[in-house]
Each structure stands twice: as structure tokens, then as C-alpha cells.
Image (tube, rainbow, N blue to C red):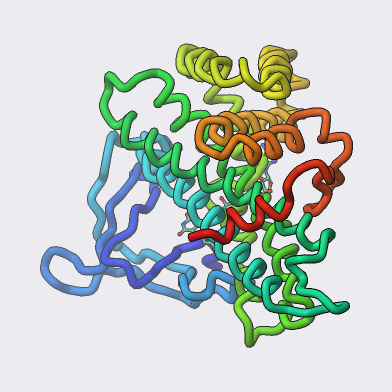
Amino acid sequence: MALAFFSVPQCDAHLVLARTADEGGLSCFYVPRFAPDGSKNAVQIQRLKDKLGNRSNASSEVEFLDAYGVMIGDEGRGVPTIIEMANTTRLDCVIGSAALMRAVLVEAIHHARHRMAFGAKLVDQPLMRNVLADLALESEAATLLFMRLAGAFEQSASKDAAPVERAWRRIVTPAAKFWVCKRALEFTGEAMEVWGGNGYVETGPMARFYREAPVNSIWEGSGNVMCLDVLRAFERERDAAHALLDDWRGDASAHPALARALQSLVESLSGDPAAREASARRIVQQLALCAQAVLMARHAESEVADAFIETRLGDARGETGRVYGTLPARFDHAGIVARAFTP
Ligand SMILES: Cc1cc2nc3c(=O)[nH]c(=O)nc-3n(C[C@H](O)[C@H](O)[C@H](O)COP(=O)(O)OP(=O)(O)OC[C@H]3O[C@@H](n4cnc5c(N)ncnc54)[C@H](O)[C@@H]3O)c2cc1C
């Protein structure tokens, strides 16, 4: 039974891991759809997978019957070779989830600006404004994070790249893949609810967005695997990690909540290794939030950055709940929503 995933089967070529002998490690092969003599390569699609969502991107089950392939990288070193690609795809997952969040946020705000309920537009009702403002903060932080990571991928392409760029790429990317993709799950459900009953039906866009949300968290390494990868990267890239934390401390001087969060992050990262693994989700959540807080402090309007930092890392965290829409009243909910809807 061929149960492995073979996505985008219509591609001109795939990277495939296989062994050259019964013993020894996996090697990485470039397997084209057509062999050099023009014949169809022996890549046999058994069936398409019936997925929850992500249906526009076909995934299949496959068998290779003496298929033609060209080894890429060193024999037996297939996993490190293919990880080069996987790391870029992880960035893609962050971009996809952040884009999904932005798309449903705009749909939700647009709906709230027109739907009248209990005598007023939804967007003018304080509790709905709180929900939308909280979603807007999350969406902005996710967007800034993927853009910073994309920049780091470009900056760190050369061997003499600055350690801090290497750290964003190697350490923050899996953290962002864990965090942003997870946040998208709850986010799309909440945005769907803004549409009320119509959010739940397939004639509108929200149900499809909701079904699409989980995939980025699962593929290319699920949440726990990402968290363990962050811890591993932190160990292996000590210099880069220290450069990153030093860089962030500069931003934290104006934000005591961020400074305290960074301090506790450093303590968690240097704690007992056994306890660290069990706490990996909490540590990586803190890392991702610090990264987002730093970027919000650098690029967002100061009131918006303060609202994000206070409610995600500061004292206001105690006042907020575990769902969206629990921002303390002192923040300018209407202003945050209006800003998010301004092109
Ligand atoms: C739509 C889709 C398309 C895909 N396309 C492709 C493709 O084209 N090519 C391809 O090769 N793969 C593809 N995949 C496979 C995908 O990359 C894997 O399913 C994914 O990485 C998870 O691996 P797994 O299924 O083996 O789960 P497992 O490794 O069995 O993991 C199951 C659960 O255990 C957790 N876990 C694993 N190890 C640990 C640990 N040490 N500690 C704690 N928790 C742990 C994981 O986080 C996960 O929650 C696709 C998957 C999907 C959903």
C-alpha cells in the first residue's frame, strides 16, 4: 500500500529520497516526469488523496517502478540535501498562513462594516470591535514576521552573511512556522464567525479558508517537530542565536514587557535539556512572540505596537483570555480596525 504523500503530481520533476543499497542512509534524487529519451518516467500515481482542504493542490500516492532519477548532493546525505528545500517551504507555510489570516480579516471587517444587527453596524459595536482589533493585531504581526524572514533568506544566502540574518532564517523560521500556522487555525474560525451563519456555508469564502488553515501546520514538519527543530538550531547556532538576542535587546529598551519576556526566554533556553524538550512549545511560543513584538516595535504605529506587546507579553496578558476579542478597553479598538482596513 502506497500511503506516502506525493504532492503536485503534475510537476515536471520531484525530489525523492531513496536508498542506493539496503544498508546506509537515504540519498536525494531529482526524478523528472520524462526520462532523457523522451519516454514517460516510471512514476505511477496510484490515486489522489481525499483531503480536508487544500484541494486545488493535488496530493497523490505513488509507486516508482525502476524510475529514472539523478542523485543530488552526496550519497547517503539525502536528508540534509532535501532540508535545504524544506526550509524554504517552511517559510512558504508562514507566508501562506499569514496571507490566509489577512484575507479572512479583510472579509470579516468588510462584512462587519455592512451588517446591521441589534440596530447598529457590527463594526460599531464594542464587543465586535474588540474581536476585529485583536485579529488585526495578530494579522499585522504575522505579516511583519514573514516579511522579515523573507528578507533574512535573501540576506543569508552568502556564506559570509551576518549571524543575525542566519539566526532569523535558521532559528526563527521554524518558530514562525509553528506559531503563525497554529494561530491561523483559531483565527480563521473566529473570522468565519464574524460572518455568522453565512460564514459556515460553502457559497461564501469563509468555510474554504477555514478548511485550508490546518495544512500549513501539519506539512513540512508538524508543530512539535518544528519546536524541537528550534531547540536544535539554538544549540547548533550559538553565535547566531546570541547575535539575535543582542539585536532584540536593543528594541526592548523602550518596552519593559519585551525586556522581561526576553529575559525569561533566555532562562528557559539555558535550562535543563530534559525539561526544555517537554516545554518546547512554551519556549517557542515565547520566541515567536518576542520576534513579532520586536518587529511591531520597529514598524507598526506606536499605539498598535504597544497593544500587541502589552497583550501578548505584558501585564495586560493577565486581563486577556484564550480567545480573540479580549483586549483591555484602554486600547483604541476602533482605530486598530480602521488601520487594518486602510489599503
Ligand atoms: C496536504 C499534504 C501534502 C503533503 N505533501 C507531501 C509531499 O509532497 N512529499 C512528502 O514527502 N510529504 C508530504 N506531506 C507529508 C508531510 O510532510 C508529513 O505528513 C508531515 O511532515 C508530518 O509527518 P508524518 O505524517 O510522518 O507524521 P508523524 O511524524 O507521525 O507525526 C505525528 C505527530 O507526532 C508529532 N511528533 C513527531 N515526532 C515527535 C517527537 N519527537 N516529539 C513529539 N511529537 C512528535 C508530530 O508533530 C505530529 O503531530 C504532505 C502532507 C500533507 C498534509
